[in-house]
Structure formats: C-alpha cells, structure tokens
Amino acid sequence: MAAIRNARERARSALVDDIKAEAFRQLSEHGSTGLTIRAIARELGMVPSALYRYFPSREQLLTAMIIDSYSALADHLDAAAATQELHRDRWLAVCHGVRDWAFARPHQYALLYGTAVPGYQAPQDTIAPAVRIPLLLLGIACDAWRAGQLTQPADEPWSDEVAANATTLARATGFLDVPPSMLMRAVSAYTQLFGAVSMELFGHLNSAFDNDTVFFNHSITLLADLVGFRCSGSS
Image (cartoon, rainbow, N blue to C red):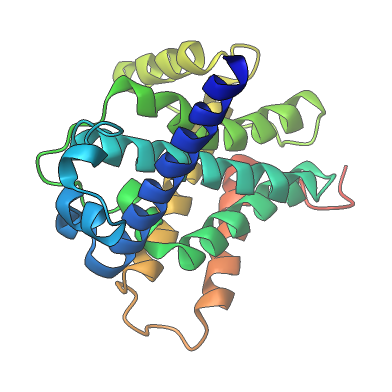
C-alpha cells in the first residue's frame, strides 16, 4: 500500500509541476491578466474541473507561481553571493544576480515586482519566500559591519518618525546589534537596486545610455558606497 501511495504522490507532484510549467509559459506569452485555468487545462489535455482538484482557484495557482518565483530568485542570489568572499563583492554579486535573473525571466520578475495582478491579494504564504531577498542583502551588510568592513555611518539628523521606522525595521529583521542608520542605508540601497532593475527592464530608461550595463555597474557601486562597504584592499 505504501508503494502505491508513493507512486500516486509522485504522479500528483509531477502533474502539479506540469500545470505550473504551462502556467509560466502562458504567463510569458500573455502576462498575468491572460492566465486562465481553462487555457492551461486545454493545453494539458485536461478538463478544467480536473485541474481545479490541484489548484481550486486561479488565485491559488498564482500564489504557487509567486512562491516558486521568489524561491528561484532567492536561490539564484544565494548562489551568486557564495561565489565571492569579500563582503562588498558579495553585495555586488547579488546586485548583478538580480539583474541577470530579471532579464532571463522577465515575466516572472514582472509577476513579483511589476504591476499588481488585478483582483489578486497575496496571502501570508508569500511573505517568507519574499523576504529571503532583502534579508540576504541586509545580512551581507550586517556581516560586513560585524567584521569591521563597513565605514561608520555619520550621525544623521532623524525625525522621530524615521527613528521609529528604524527601530521597527531592526526588530522585524532581528538585526539588533548593528547601527540603525546603517540598516536604513542598506534598505534604501535594496529598494534603489530593484528600482534600477525595473526601470531598465520595463523600458523606462528609453535608450538614455549607450550602454545600460555600464550605467547599472556605476549605480550599484554608488549603492555599495551608500551602505558603507569598504573597497577591496582598504582597511
């Protein structure tokens, strides 16, 4: 009986993978608004009612796709960071990894960071895979701080509201042993990184530069400086 159950579980898992693969294919062709259970079922030779046994709604299918996409991006960035030893180089490798992944999988990137899908409300299930990405970048910055490889942030005049945000951020991320000003710089750099990638990917630079890669490299160097990463060889 156990062998039969395991075989059924493997068959079910394989079919779920096929459904998601077809959904991602249709996403690349039609975008999220053109994604329908009926069209996916037709391409897989299924009736829609059969597909609903695996994904009871389009929203649940979208959630699975979003979780898979966040996880794929986070895994890609973990691997990129692991290729470098110095903290600044790890940060820059992750920045390049975001851009490389976005251009390799533009429709998945758009699903995560583009226009919200009309009528879709992401559930709590998507939070854990989503926060892997900022936590990776913040973690590199915090590791650099602990290793003495970040410059001391200058005292900055903060409003009470900004100070409260910094405290909330430190508690939410668990990075309580680093200066709040450094943490806020790292978060600012994280948001600017994704802004830079999105502006380029979605065509908002509009051929403003002869070489977008050169501009991106310059931008992430400025972001690394903003966080306070010391250059290779500096002490």
